[in-house]
Image 1 (cartoon, one colour):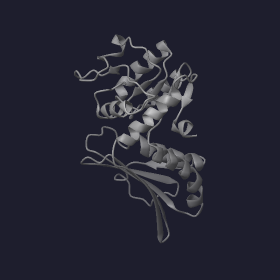
Image 2 (tube, helix red, strand yellow):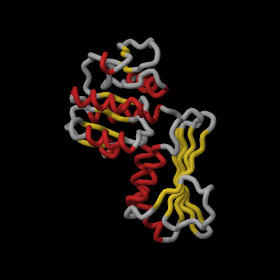
Image 3 (cartoon, helix red, strand yellow):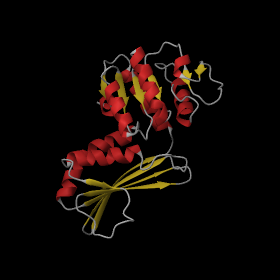
Length: 246
């Protein structure tokens, strides 16, 4: 478990105790000791445990070192860290040529079903002249904005629309009517919101909103463990939660 002392690390370790098909054999975390029954190492270079797959819920800065470690050991990785730069995403793509990498902006079943649904309905709404907006809400400790999930939702929509739409993150510096082929993405940060995402299709005199609400981090942990079980033993390549759910 890479990032075992973080909030999601604790969630996943607790969930793994209830799954007879999962055993956490080691943890990696640079911050502090732990009371886990398995060994915890401060860096990957110190870890000598044998494993079938790594689950990562750390942070973007740790991803390059993690990918290198996985490549050297031919170890599949479920990559859940968000806020990756364009260069880091390219590193992820390159690593998938050597090991199995499962990357998803959101590990929950609900979001991944929503991604699939959006590809089907977005062209219908767009053809009918509906505007498209995404509003995401998260807790006040989240570092990146907009969320990776919001971007994934926008990408899913845009892919179904032949990539013709531009993303708007801030309209404060312009005075103009809303372009037709635009997806507005807004981020709210406050309190302890686990994760809310609304995809709004706004037409003439009617609005349709597709929403997902996360009420606990357990939904992400459960998805990550299912992904780990799926990825163990898989050949090199890029995978996502759609593969797990298929």
